Image 1 (cartoon, rainbow, N blue to C red):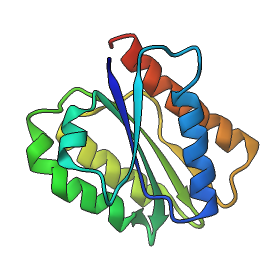
Image 2: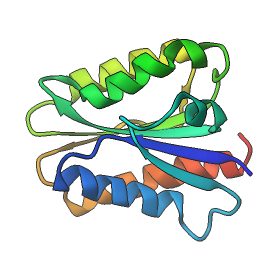
Image 3: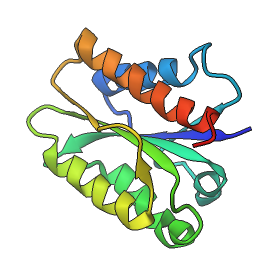
Length: 152
């Protein structure tokens, strides 16, 4: 059974709403045969990243960059995963109050170096999440999970 790892940094009610929407999509009844593992970025292990078949990454944008927690995860997993995880699908959601562009670019640079393949455009949310934002996160989680279910 393929495993989807949702690695996130969720320090606010807004990022919690986005995480819950992603999980609703990833765990949708129409998607069968995918195990969804949820880990805070600070406690996610290298082994969990290596064992997963795909990823959804979630972060706030802090001062124009990804959270320190997600960066710390990348720092720990980069070399152990560099040769072993290439080609795996991933999705990204970012919450910001002023700008999300720097955070998205930083994550995309690292995932590109790892050889991960985006299966959907990054979902970026400014301020309090609205219904469209939550729907986009639900679709993101569902898209990555369905990609794994279909064996792509």
